[in-house]
Image: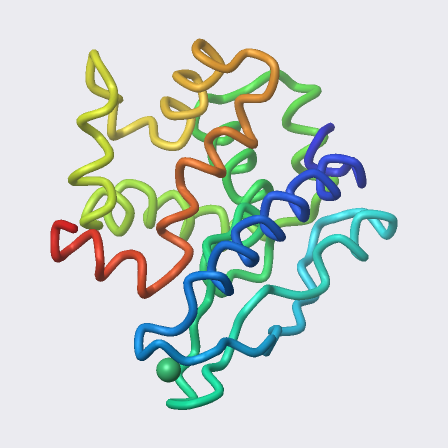
Length: 189
Ligand SMILES: [Zn+2]
C-alpha cells in the first residue's frame, strides 16, 4: 500500500521542502527574514522506514517580529497524529466499503474506530464548512458528492491524474494545512 511505502513519503517530503523554500523566499508579512523553527512530529501508522521522512514539520520564525509562518504541507493535515495520506485513505476506504483485502490493510494500520469516526465527521461538517472548500468546490464539474468526501475527491483525482491521485489530492488540500493561507482565502485574495 502506498501509504506504507517509504518512497511515497520521500516524494511528499520533497514537495513539502518546495513549499518551505517558497515560504522562506517570500519572507515574513512584516518583511523580516524567516529562520527555521521546525516542529518535531512522530506520526502513527507509518512504517519504520518511512518515519525518517515524516519526523518534522517545516515552520519558520521571523527574526524581527517573532511571528510563526508555517508553510503548506502534503504530509500533515493540522495537528493530527496520523499523516494526511493515512487520514484520507482510511476515511475514503471506510466510507466506500472497500474490498476485504483493503479493509484488512486498514486494520493493520491500527487506527482506532473512534478516530475514524471523528475524521468522517470532520470531512462532512468541518471540511465542507471551510472557506477553502467554498472556493475550491467550484473546480469540480459535476459537483463532488459531499456525503462521500474524501472518497469522491479521490475518485475525481483518479480520473484526471490516474498515475498519482493521492499526491495530487494532498497538493490540492495543502492550503488547508496553513492557518495563514486559510485567512488569505477568507479575505478573497
Ligand atoms: Zn515578522
